[in-house]
Image (cartoon, rainbow, N blue to C red):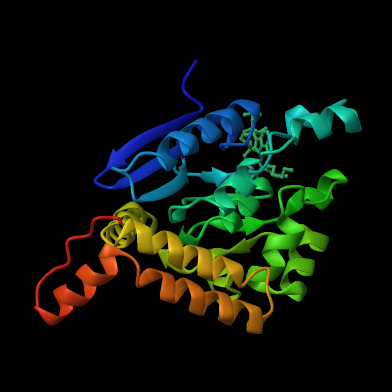
Length: 258
Ligand code: COA
């Protein structure tokens, strides 16, 4: 049986490809287990600075949870299947930057997985939606909570209540994706972005993510205080000394991650 998730390292970027193209990369148990394994290994791998998540084939990023697994399931079975830690939460709290490279259908759990990433880069042909309503379900991977924080309550209501799909242009307009590219340029442009991010200090990237993520859960006043504390904490790092010295010395910084 083919690996459900493939890992390819390109420089300091690990590309994780969900590998069920025949099923439009629907998220089944094997994908979830493999993703967790890969993320666990990448978290402690100092050679990797950035993670890119994508789907195999040209048609789909992820077409949602594997609907076949829902048939005949009791609430208790489903609860077990959704036991923590969940891939959406692990990804959302991952210490290294995670970019969703959305190459096609980005539906249901796929849209929720993308919403858990730090940055979303999409093919101009990608399609987005939360179609669970058509199955008598609601989003179960954080879609009702993370999506409103990205695109607002009204746009989330529209997607979740209608189950409608939208194109990449509209997704970009409402803030569901940050960048779009023609399909043939998607990989190159995404890897360029990952490479630029991966060339920064891994320590500072981690702190920067932590500060921005705090905006999801804190008041502006608390968040600004937290940011100031993290900013001052950076003054204890060798990389801050190096970054400042490199700028003043008109040379390229050599990060140590300390
Ligand atoms: N779970 C399980 N299988 C899925 C799937 C999913 N979420 N999405 C697609 N597939 C499977 C199809 O059953 C089909 O398998 P088959 O060839 O063995 O019959 C294969 O992937 C190709 O999909 P198909 O529906 O034939 O492609 P399409 O181009 O006609 O339609 C979609 C594409 C995305 C519109 C359609 O597949 C779809 O609506 N998928 C479900 C999306 C969804 O509701 N996601 C939320 C789940 S909670």
